Length: 405
Image (cartoon, rainbow, N blue to C red; front, side, top):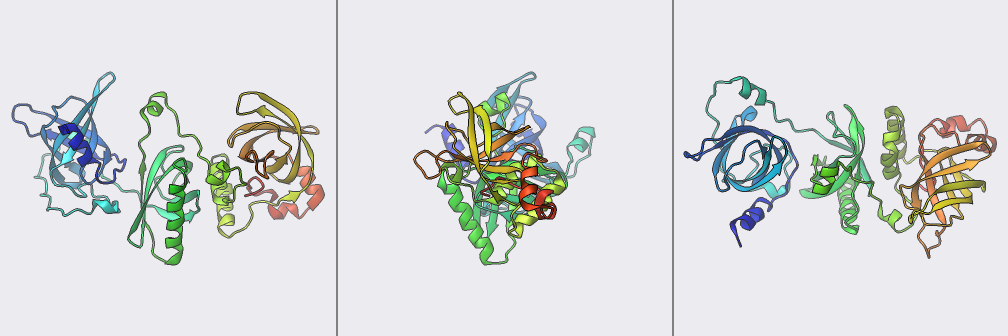
């Protein structure tokens, strides 16, 4: 095994967290002077990744300093990868001489607990203009978990992560750590974020979430939480793709979704902050976000199926809510997330497919849809005619989800 392979194993043997930390990198090689202000791209107990403006020789010993924290250590350049660009930059992997929580993360992953030697304080420096610019405090976001289900969670924080960012979460309760991948679907400034858990790896992550929920509900310990940006595939970065919505196992199996929090998180970007928070409180109390009525109504549906063929057919509702419907009689395969148009009488609106019944199951030919417009009025006159004026206080002006939430 070559030095590169050994180094890669060494750097990755503790959990990596995507975290930007301003550092001062200085070469300790007397034959090649080198010093640069740069930011980490990811960190762990054994090293870090940095983007630097000049190439540096692999194997070089360096001094790494977090100027704002007055903390420094030494490391070895383990990997150097040219990134190109104009001006050109390089990705440098460093292996710390003394593994540990050099980064000062308050709730570091459990596998960062390594026997640490004291790190000497950095000597006093005369702060020049360049150094002052780098002296930004290394701030750790504070997270408070307020809601969680098998498919999603909501976290309160004063510094939200942007919409559609891929993230990794470290949640520790009862001395057990749970690492979860997800995508930010709701981001409210100075308030919090809603994260949809990535279930693309199958049942494993869902099982981890369920175990976590059991621990959280069995005691009153406040979980320790860290959330950071997650690495995405290079091809996604190059073409500027954002992670696609992920489906829960119920949706993949063709069953009707039974996760109100997940549906709310998925729709959150289309809701006002006030509407979202009201709906979040409602589902937290176990209340349905909107009134649902069983009624059979003929509706015209148009869209495109999974093969790209156009659909234009008559279907029937099984039930409706202000912004959703359960439809039956679908001929053609539709995927969750697809957009269809519904038309009836003089109205026509777009809806998103929330779930689709799988072939050869009792729900084959059925789909649940949610209105794209959060202020949809597609079913208003039917609901008012069937329920009456009390609908105004029963949820007509509140947010809601597709039937089957």
